[in-house]
Length: 266
Image (cartoon, rainbow, N blue to C red; front, side):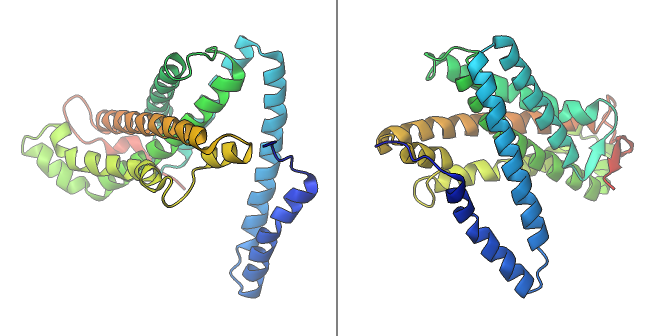
């Protein structure tokens, strides 16, 4: 089976569903058509730019350029984690709290994949490393962002109960233990749902793309299983690391709650 080559006309026809949805928005005065249009235009522009950039990076196949692209992706993901928080830390903590966990989890799991299942691929081969790190990084970023937002919001809401436990002799890990566990579960909901529904409820994107490209369905399923295991492991490591660091960042060495370190997003 040969891959299906998509033309501009094919993409425009696919956009008909979005045009219909926008028409319904106008007809029912839902006022979401403008947001849909802007998001669609941004998506098209971004993906085309990324496609052109990756074509260039794949062509030159330079380890230095590959490392630069990977670093830029991690920096962008770190900023996204910070920007999505309702309550934020000031100074270096705002970036370190998200950047350190996602960097550790993403680099470790990507390295694990490249030394085991994908050992035939060169470490700095852009065609393997960039897409793999990108999909793992995006998953870790989402989970970490959800977990940190849930944890910091809960700390603000339950600050009196936390301070009461601290004043009665609990250390910061005990006083914040319940919130940390709840935030961890919250951050892992997308990963768990993705694994639980894979195959039965929905065919994951990678598997669908490989089947459409002509790969044998069983081989595509194996690749999807590999990817889902990597995503689950990286997401869990990132969320656990982020919530643990958050406990330390929101308290001081004397186990006092330090909400003065947080600012609310305007």
